[in-house]
Image (cartoon, rainbow, N blue to C red):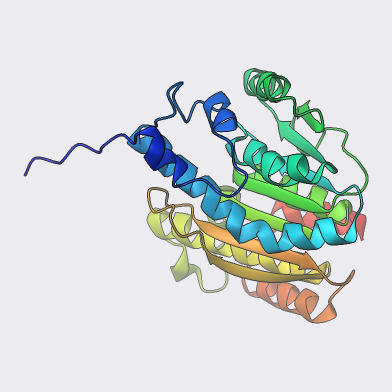
Amino acid sequence: MKKRARQSLDPAAVQGTLLEGQSVRTLQALGLVTERGGASADAHRKIKQINHFLRLIAPALEDVFARHEQPVLFEMAAGKSYLGLALYEHWIARQGRGRLVAVEARPELAQRVRDIADELGFDRLEVVCGRIAEVDLPERAHFTLALHACDTATDEALVRAVRAKSDHVALVPCCQAEVARLLKGVKDGPDALWRHAWHRREFGAHLTNVLRGLALQAHGYQITVTELAGWEHSLKNELILGRRVGSFHAGARAELDALLSTIPVRPWLLDALAADA
């Protein structure tokens, strides 16, 4: 059966999908909306995804802006910073306060985000080029975002968030390969769960996110794990939301230790956080 071509949206239809206060100009600068105000089907899907994510993190940002006069927001592994720039417009630009620090390792993408920020007059947005674990960042953060940061880049973002005592954390992990590599050498415990390569990849990805969640809890975060609905085109749509409610949780630490005694892997994340203890 011949597939029906997806239809582009006219300017009126695009306007109907925007959030309150969201400008076509920003979406044009991001390359998602044409000069005439229309959008391709793929671009429209991207806009809907961005706006859905903005709604999901709205409670965290409402809390941050209510409690801090000049909140500092981190966007880790920013890429083209679709979400970061939309977040800036929706919160920092409208509030007239706060600061967004976007971290991106690829120089060409970092410069692209700088250029868009300059074009839009987003002067409270700083782009830092380099590896998340190595760049200089403000000592204190109030909200940390990492969307599809590959493999251990998500862990680097998590560590920087914990070190900065970030009030809120939002992670959508991607390409969890490190634990799968470690499992390949583990012959103890319930190794039938990861004996075959396919199972090792799938179980390794699941275990990675379980360890991330427990690590956050052990460092005083209350977490929620859910599906990032509306991202069905991606297999990486697990969303980990964390809210800092303390500095240490003995119960979560005990759970983490018990799990590691059953499945003896030691990813970089745990050693990095242990070094701060």
